Image (cartoon, rainbow over all chains, first blue to last red; front, side, top):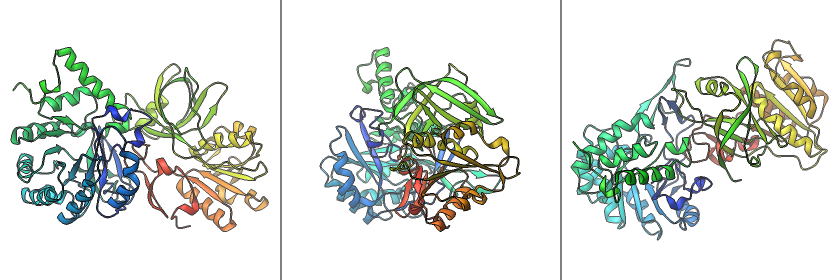
Length: 286
Length: 258
């Protein structure tokens, strides 16, 4: 699948890949009300990665339903909407609105955005916060509910267990790691709000470790993401216990990376004589 | 316009002066159609500190040679690596990206193209496209000193060229907005690319003179495709992606305090 915020609505990449060859497209973070996001500059290139502080810029769920959905409902893959909010009621109402859309089979609940002052990550860093928002959304939303977890916590397995108990169908991890970059000539932070979320290969070892820990802690499927740049990276996540993977920042370097990773996984399975990905999910020899 | 991922072949790598390299690239098949003002995302291989592609404007398209040119200003590790490419190397390019400059409908339109530093790069292809439609553009090009003025001979083939340098080593001394041509001639349209303070000064001149003006922005960007929302400019329509809705904007769309 493609990670939210890195693949637009899929349409932006239609010139490069057959969108239907991708298992799922998780579209931009959507909130109940429109958000302008944070001021520019929002991006800093870092060693083997990048920081962003976009801040959930989007035109709101009404705009999505009216103008975006008609453009994407016909895409023959799992079109999944990433849902964010600043209070439980907003999350639930936004999820309910998305739930009315026939061709959106799932949502990914973003309780882990590090770039907004209220809500976002605030829900995702305590078991109680995570549980309250997942419960509220679960009551309002009947289809598949994936909850995206923050790595900016002491014990991610604990959060994952509380999300599972609250009714999540799956968890995805990790969202970005909170970071910072400084322009030493200006003695100022590079990003407009000083801090941002780190993504790219730099975060991969952390993401892999967390996926491994969470996969052991919950019974629901785990979706792994964080710095996957190629098929080998994706296979590592699957061996660590990920049922599915998301590709994010790598889309910026190679807009056709998704299908290459899928092909690479197939080649790996064939080379090792495995019948399907089921043969490698969580099959880490330890 | 359809976008492509291409492995282009370097046919020439010309060091125009210290820190400036002109890359000429070709492909075995005809290159896609490109509009002046559009840009490409160039992949940088072999640099430990460069992660993202480098957005570089299209400098020139030579249809007969099936070549696209990029003028690289070596400002960091990524652009320095691009400057090391030699003929025969392959360079992975995503293009064409963004929206370009408006081409005048009437050949009689008097267009002023104002460039500063490496910002003159897209104006060469723009000037070529204008000349093809019968338009005779005027170029006003600025630099710190004579050595900063690149590709002057090519500009001179396409239109009238006026220059300014801050040290007076070529053309009139001072900034582009201080050049005497601005008080001697009338223009119907202005297009500009260069350092932001220069473009703001040009935009201020254009607004005061009531001349439509387009500027080409270079906000730092990641994807180049309108997906990551990093390169936004605050406009009358809110935050919009420079890579997708720009990089060329009419100054009336922007919220610049000019």
